Length: 341
Image 1 (cartoon, helix red, strand yellow):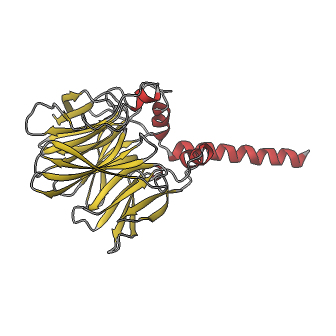
Image 2 (cartoon, rainbow, N blue to C red):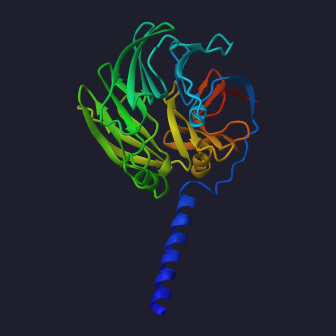
Image 3 (cartoon, rainbow, N blue to C red):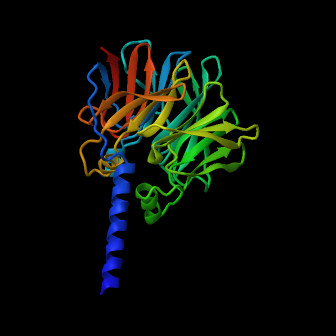
């Protein structure tokens, strides 16, 4: 009997330890203080503007939009890419993929300038399994070029272009089955990865807790990777053959999502400070999830904006432009433009 009670006590202690670990490692106890020193300039009505990227040289933004909440609840509306002229002051995005005939549920995107007013765009697409779509942008007109599809695209989240012929993408999960994914999400099992494509697909980083947003440093020498389940930003040195060597991890204290660079090369990241609240929100079990915007400069992370979800739920991307702060979200019904008071 004593042996049974001891065994039961050990099991209870282990379960309590697991619950405590899950709550503490996902930011459940994080206090959110609503930032009040920003005023709202505009609310752009786009449902699920999960990712965007700004070209500061030619002063425009490309937005990836997909109504994830609608699809979750049975409304299968097509997603789109949008072009936003940042100098017009009108905040009226132009739909770029209006004539794109294939199913399109875009996720992470990347932009590379090829020559004057000519760009390459890659977009993760979850419409027909998992693919990465290649487009070329001429001014504000988009042309479909190719589709990349491979068995290594287990759960692609974000993509970044290295050059015209190569790119990296993240798989935010290493398992496709329900139980494996639950272990990654709640036990923090590090099974996701980064893939590299240069005509062939190659795994270049593995053993990551939820490999999410990805970008390249301003000098293009390092790959920057968001690991929200570990509350870390990972820095990798890019090798000549495209392989990666881990340089360092930076503890950021929040669940970082997509990574954007400003004109100085500083990082701006939309984040999820409470991952359990975000998971419940994404599943439709909660009406809101907290948001945070952080800036990383000279290896130091600074929280610039917090919201408990009442105004901005589940911020996923952020970037500054000309004194304004743009914030996109996973499933909210607007892309927000803020200005510091």
